[in-house]
Length: 557
Image (cartoon, rainbow, N blue to C red; front, side, top):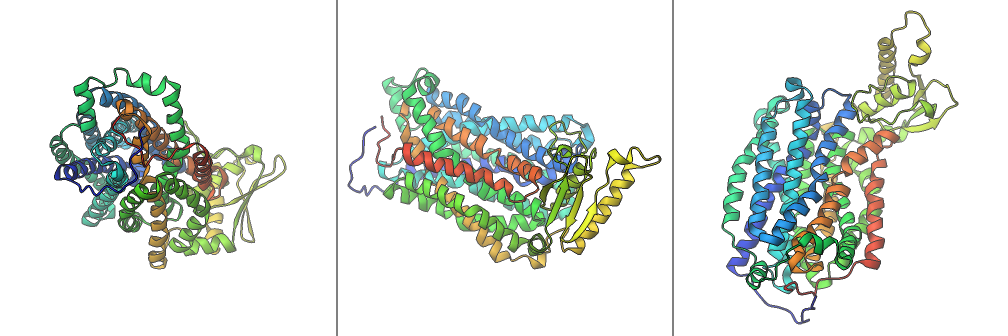
């Protein structure tokens, strides 16, 4: 692609360009609102739709269903990206918006597991898949559409408004959830009020469709259409020719994977970590996240603007490097600030599980029927996982009955295999006795059942969450402009959409479920952070050597 001239362009945004940015951004905000409602309400959804399994598995299932919408995003990118390169940008994202809005509305009407059994989670996952397909076609269209209206030296600034939409959509969803909780109370919200934010989306769908209908086709696509130069086979051109496929792979592993894990760690994993691991109530968690998002959101535009001056690559890779170096200390600070009693107990009275590793199961059951009560090790770890207590594993000789040590106090774990030989033994009573003794030991050591609202250092929590969001803005603000600039206009929608949605849909979307499964398997509440740290470091290395700088390229060819 041609390079632009080095002199500054004093072009001011026209009314039409402002409409393009506003309409594209607002429409995309509503789509992200729809998509992220599920993530905000994962804890409640796990009880409503996955109540037929044990609690830890149910929560991971809920996160996996959350991730299911991300899993199909690359397929949505292929389907709608191809349509966008064949028939146009505007009509394609009108279709994706309709699919998204109707699927979200349907979640609000869906009966729970208690009403229709296993059909409930099945239908829920189908609706999530429909949302994922729609979003797979939405983002590439909106980013391409805005970029193709932007002057060459302001693409980072213009497309950064699209980059704000994911966070603003999450922020809007938070506000609706918070408002509903405040209006009807926590008990009613947990019972039926969680449906309200989903049902409200039908109004947002109507508004979004009206906004998008005001737009005309992208000038770059219209020019190609008038000249008869649009691609006849965008999938073949994009992925069956090594020259373009090589750029797709570099974009994916040298930029998008790192951006994706930083995004989902800084916004969603932080939210889940506060609520599930640190036991902060949902209301407080939502408020604190919302404040951090409000503070951090303007920096999407700042880093988009900055990337027009110093380049996209240094900002994205710097964000990955800082994230990899800071996640463990930042989440440690989050624990100290949000649940100081838990942090103190972890330091002064660490929990250790001593057990025969051959008797320890991976604490996640894909079938959803394992109660994890067949060995003393499983009974101990299931109890600790349910309590949200981190622990260290110590290997014991084969056949040893597991013990749980809380500080200096050691609690023997009920062993169903040995007690099976004892006449009259009742496993349920043995398990209950162990749990009562372990609970008493944890309480005595200062482990809290819930975070004390009065003890939460809210300014420090907001500070840490804001730092996490700032890292998100560094990697995400410039990424749309870079992806648009990497690919030729005739196959741009298809080419940029696939790496974006593989990175964000697979590497990012599966992060919460994978990270919590890692925590459940090891007992270390911070172990899941290795996922984003390793991914961000891999992107940093590959990006340094393979990713080209694009900010001076013209995109009109």
